[in-house]
Amino acid sequence: NAGVTQTPKFQVLKTGQSMTLQCAQDMNHEYMSWYRQDPGMGLRLIHYSVGAGITDQGEVPNGYNVSRSTTEDFPLRLLSAAPSQTSVYFCASSYSSGAEAFFGQGTRLTVV
Amino acid sequence: GENVEQHPSTLSVQEGDSAVIKCTYSDSASNYFPWYKQELGKGPQLIIDIRSNVGEKKDQRIAVTLNKTAKHFSLHITETQPEDSAVYFCAASMRTYKYIFGTGTRLKVLA
Image (cartoon, rainbow over all chains, first blue to last red; front, side, top):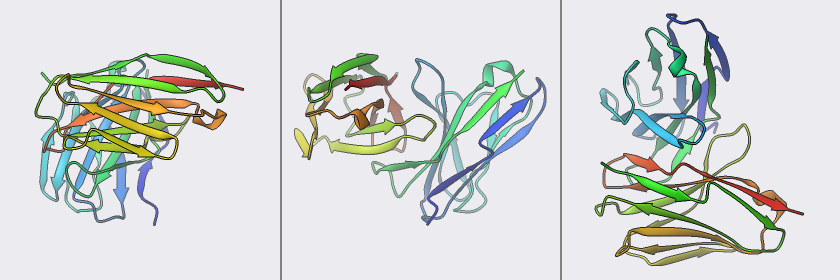
């Protein structure tokens, strides 16, 4: 039982490049979400999903796309990276709303 | 909009002393209040949570109290140990999946 797995752990991008952060969970959780963590700002919700085929925006969705084709996977896409997207990104999953969220180990992204 | 304020941002205590971290939330519809611990280089992990129908919950050295009228909740760690050193986040959630996190408290337990 691996829990929530994020790849890659580290990534450096040039401004304007695109990439996908991967997130997979093996707990059969319906709820999955992406957060970014910046110094002094806590964890801010980017996008979330309440099940396969259903996604919605969080607090800071601009510049990011998501899709949820399976229960297990919830990738986060940066279409045109900007320095303001330099951050640590966390994926989380939960059995239901109002339940414990399990976090991945994070992806540290630097955009130069 | 929804907001969670967390204080203090840093906290240093001597080993064996108690630590208290406080959070205030803005949305009175919030009904679930988890606390997460984040160690260096790792993702946050749940340490304790409380729901709006309960005023206090305890798990060994950790306790959480909730005051719905004042819209604040607190984390209490007693008999602190060096391994308690980490960043702690509070969060508030309504019936949706949208957790709103506080800005975090860096706790240092001095040996």
